[in-house]
Length: 270
Image (cartoon, rainbow, N blue to C red; front, side):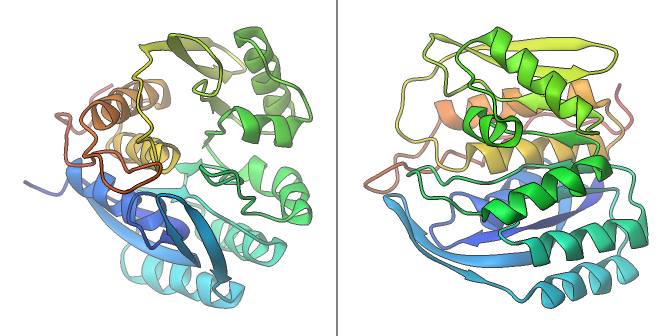
């Protein structure tokens, strides 16, 4: 398989391999993308939950970003777990330094088992500074509720929350609807000009660990090859759905999805 583009992933590590940077690298590689990384934290976890989070010093995360981009410039950047104000500030500084145009933010705040992965102060700093620097933000419903302060119970609530995020300065929003109780999962893409609802039949399984990380990296991968953001979201959702459908049933808790599936990726496809 020929390498189609290069992306930089800024995120935390998952020792169980189902989420975080491990899932990001698997996703990018499956889609023919060269993945570089800057680790923000090391998590000790398995499919049953997170035992602890060990932060990487913020300046070392910044150095990873700078040294990597100085040598290999990525076509796009995916940002995942940012656990503290200090690391968000360093990532913000690096985005100002290099001005990569295509940046996807997955605002990882809560682990699958319910553990909080970011401080309240960091959330406020993210809203104030980082949201204005990214091309797309991909919160799930609990994350969108934290960011907007709104209670989300319907698709209409999702649209309202997405528009509130646009007012914060985000260019594009994809709110993932998997937390709503319905047989059809609705993921809603919104910007100032358009709205698109991607509908998928719910796949009933407990093995959904890493879906958010995987989706944001798949979107980044497609976007890095010249696809529009809306098309990148559509293809990313298809990739994740297939990964959920073919999950390998690993672990005793919320098992990982199957990253070893691929969608034909043609560069400059609109």
